Amino acid sequence: MKLSPLIVGCAAVAVLSNTALAWTNEDHEIFDIVSALESAEGKGTTFYTFLNVTKSATEKDISKAYRKRSLELHPDKNPDDKVVAARFARLGTIAGILRDAEKRERYDHFHDNGVPRWRGTGYYYSRYRPGLSLVLVALTMFSAFIQYIFFLLQWGLSIQRIRMFQNQALEHAWGPTKKPLAGRKRLRVKTGEEAGPGIPGIAGGRPTRPGQTLDMVIEGENVYIVEKGKEILLTEDNALLPSVWDTWIPTLFRNTLARITGRPIPESGGYADLDEDGKPVPAAAANGKKEKEAPVVVKKPKGPAKPAEGAGKVAGRRRAGVPKRPEA
Image 1 (tube, rainbow, N blue to C red):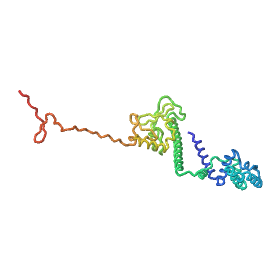
Image 2 (tube, rainbow, N blue to C red; image 1 turned 180 degrees about the vertical axis):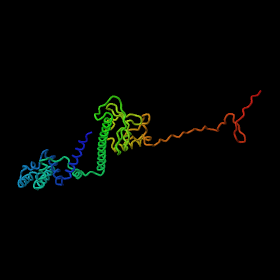
Image 3 (spheres, one colour; image 1 turned 120 degrees about the horizontal axis):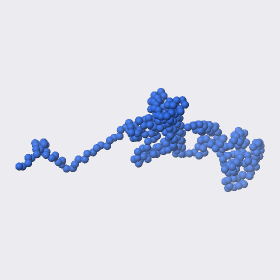
């Protein structure tokens, strides 16, 4: 698996986050005015076109254009017109930005390079003021997203580990050229001196122990791992591609639903262990837990017990009865 797109994406997010943190309150004000201006006057309308001046206009030209436009949009000439009142208020804000050298420089930067689409979490939070419930939902979804990214990284590492074992096994069996010969070859390969992550599909994906010996069978380019007398083909398909349904939110929902309905809680991840016959072992047995055997209930017959045939009673004790002699 190539992780470069994922790494590039994370780097891009980090760069955007740092850029968003560098924007000031004055930048946020410019973002608001630009959005409102384009929404009211049309896409592509700029501060300069709204004042009917060019970008190279001086402060004197801007003040002159502002006085002229303010006479056109003054609320006294357009009473009870909320649209004109909003345009007049916007005109004053725009003229104030262009007459301030520092603010105008910031606006010219966004005029030339475009206003960013992502303006930082602080900008949106200050504008929309989400409630506590919405914040908790967003944090919950974000945690599930981070968990899914972690699962993808684990999946990529599993693919790399499978390829490593395949290459080492083929090199041990057929030499450095890895050119397969006829027949099958058995190998006993030791893992490293330190514990490593598990092999997907082998031993339930549990981590390998330091110096653990793995029994392998090589046939052509196929690598099998012998586990409990069963040969398991080692392929990249053993590493299951994670899904969003594997994250903690859907898993919690499924487990809760299983408890309510009384159904068995679904096992998460890994592979079931196999017994000597190659059959899956129940989860309880795989974890070393023995299932409780159901008690055997013996039903007693109703009424007094009948004495055994040929049994007698002497002094309150039963003795074996003597069969009667047949009459002559």
